[in-house]
Figure 1: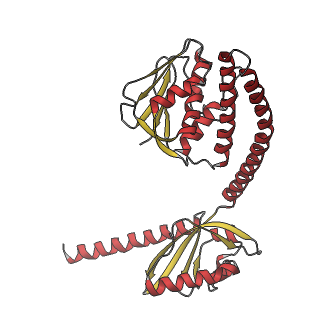
Figure 2 (figure 1 turned 180 degrees about the horizontal axis):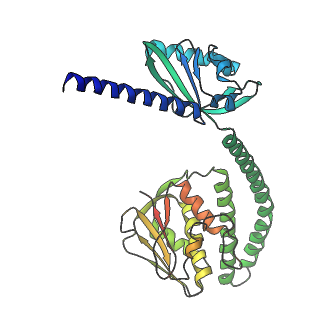
Figure 3 (figure 1 turned 45 degrees about the horizontal axis):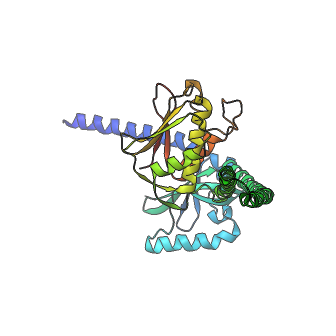
Length: 350
């Protein structure tokens, strides 16, 4: 490379560097996320325009001031201690990605924000830049959901109280009758009442346990499927369990609920002569439940797990929603598999 070539190369490099700098400035000034840069004394050295949408301050109002001004007073000592400790030791006590904290708006109210922080050096000075996202909408939705869950739990408790008495009365009278009459049919009645009691208790537990499967143990898929089938109005329907099924790590109560709802769904939609098969996936990642019924229309496959979804005249629309909830509580992935004759639900558990 000649001297002229080198000179041209340096000129082009400088031009590209200027373009990169301009592009970066445009990007920072136009992003919807707030940006703040502070030094190790928490003095604000830079703020982009988007910070005004989040905190109400213009960049010029923030630059030169202390970051403590946008931190609620009760949290300022914590911030000062953590920053001083990091400056001295380099130890990070918390994850700097997506920290959810309240920030102080110019008008005095607190704004829930997500902050991702990075350290960098500029002209020999240690700096810290935070990316701010306003998460007010998400927090509001979470609070509403929490309130709904609390109301649901309260309703479940009231329902529990109201159901308990008539079930106890029915069980008491049935027990008395069993001493005087033919036990065969009354045994069936007692089994049904016991099952109502179990379902009542189990659903109450399911509501109160905050979507987590707490009591996981290794259970026989074949045994649980067989037991679940007993509580389905199967008429002439048939259950087939393949020989290759394996034990599953699951909360047995919830697992029964999942299978019962799938079995009921298959028989309700497929008719009295439906055949349901439970087997192990060829991928060796879990199990499947399939039937030879009418299947699921292509344009409805994305909505079948929604609350209220049903194509059956007498359906509640809760069955597949419960299936999805139980699978989610176990961290299982559900897929609608390919089945030419009916519906196929695949559960990837490993």
